[in-house]
Picture 1 (cartoon, rainbow, N blue to C red):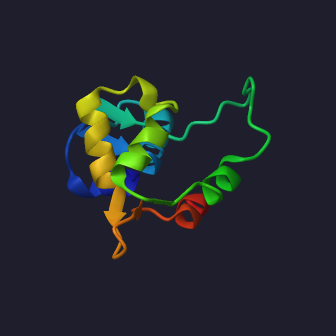
Picture 2: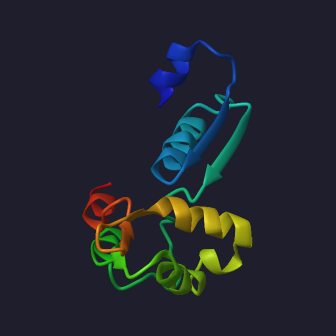
Length: 122
């Protein structure tokens, strides 16, 4: 990430990232304070050394067992809407997530665009 910023030759660019990209942005800023003018980091993977109520399984294992296929986007939305962080999302943002996070299958069902095994590898 730092090499990309250096290559751009921009002074203090704005950084926008989601998930792993957010983590990379935060790592660059943490080791090189002032690299970015502004940060927008959505759902970065940041693990505290002390995690209260930590899950019994690590996040890679949880990702590997994530349900990947749903009968429809509506069924996926019904399941996700109840869970954090989605339960508190703006309805339009949530609808956009459901639209983009799933791909259509030939049998009319939908599956996660990022396979759980790939998420676990990351």
